[in-house]
Amino acid sequence: MERTKQKIDRIFERTTKTNQIHEAVLFVENMDGDFSYGTGYGGKNIDTPFLMASITKLFTTTCILILKEQGKLSLDDEVAKYLTKDTLSQLHMYKRQDYSTGLILSNLLFQTSGLPDIFEEGSNKAKKRAIYEDRQFNFDDKIAMTKQLKPHFVPGTGKRAHYSNINFDLLGEIIETVTDSTLEDVYQQFIFDPLELRKTCLLKSDDDVVPAVYYKDIVLYRPKFIRSSRASGGISTARELMIFLKSFFGGKLFNQTIFNELKTMNKLQVSMYPIQYGAGFMIVPLSGLATLFTGKGELVGHSGSTGSFAFYHPMQDIFFVGDVNQMANPALPIRLAMRLAVSVGS
Image 1: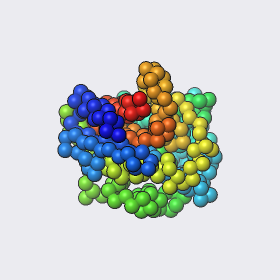
Image 2: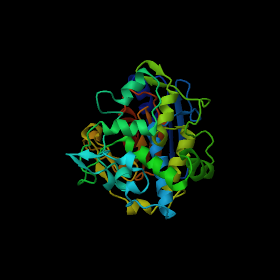
Image 3: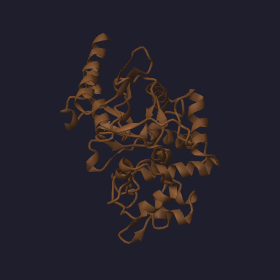
């Protein structure tokens, strides 16, 4: 155990010293909790709130899978069943043909819709704008911006996936339609209350405390932008995120057999190599070139663009949760989790 902690410390220290990191936190634990180790940098600890960013997609995935178990929706349902014609009209125009009404829920959950991402694409991408100004985007804004960009392929084409936040924005709206509740209330009912998470939330009002995030050496405070993210943007701590991640993969929130039913995975765009995408979560192989063929198995979970990460290594039954709080290098938290998994297993 002590040797494992020393390995974790070395990797964490190397990461925080060499990658323009101003503050960070790491929490490592196995399912039973008989191995548990947390460390921090820059005054952070496992109870310090941080931005989850796209890790929040796991919470949205949880709600979709619970509603599926309850028989309130099917992943084969057409999106048009839940959203208005105005929302969907010409949302997915590919080679002069409109595929919008043919989109199904699984296209969104598995990132196989082919829809573009307004945060990373286009001449006026939202992520770049957020670095320089704090601006609110509502759902209609994001739909309109998506319609200005070209989709990448016909929905459900082969083994193709393209990571796009709009997929989960759409799922968030569908959750609200099915439950006749706000997404915040559904999270509370399905996840926060059952797991007794008190510091994990979606932003609701101007009074909510929003952690700052770094872009290189610049400190950004972007409450309006974070509130805009909703289905893919929330706040938590390493301790509470660990509770959630164990519950997500341990069967406490929905039946674990769902992972056998939905075990399809698809490669994401080249810029996100080696990440693949499954049923609402990332899959990071540990056996290829990215780990110099030294790793085994895979990581499952999610990372966030603000430097957050939450991954499970099933082969070793160990979880890696934390945050490096740096927007300038979105690949860094994934590489950190990969190094930790390979090192701890050696």
